[in-house]
Image (tube, rainbow, N blue to C red):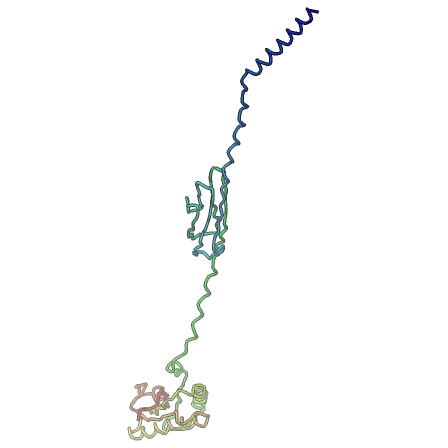
Length: 253
């Protein structure tokens, strides 16, 4: 019985020591949780536009860009390092793709803009010059003289043929006024030949008027034998001088 009490007292005392030791022992605080990791740096953004996107060769375009979160921007071809926001003028020789590269702690981004260069069509050839209008002097070279027999003012067949062609010319060019000169060869007096030359000139005029040429366009004058075109004393030369000769313009009164 006594032995039992001792055991019980021992257990109680041991329990008290344990409780006392537990009460005296200092509590240790739990460590704080670790801080969250820092967020990753923001990725850069960049935009690029080209206006106009199509241009004729030799023309200019405006390149405009904006960027965020970039520490380095490079625009190619031909521009190089640029600020985060800006614009530049370019004059591409050929169709070109412009590319801007934005770099930063958060990575790399690119943006592009295509410019199409067209070659303008060649200018149309100049219009052909208007056809040259012949002068009255040049036109008048078509008119042929009428020739006569010795001491005659009658219109012979070859003269009528020449005068008919002359009439057609004068009717086609109603603006032209002209003079018919009467000429003779060297034979006969000067006074006689002046009269003969006058008859020859008027004979040619009358035929032209009969063929439809207005008479007020025609002047007549006689030079007789004073203005020969040939000075030899033979029939061939005399024949060349017996004529009704046409001259551009009216006789000055």
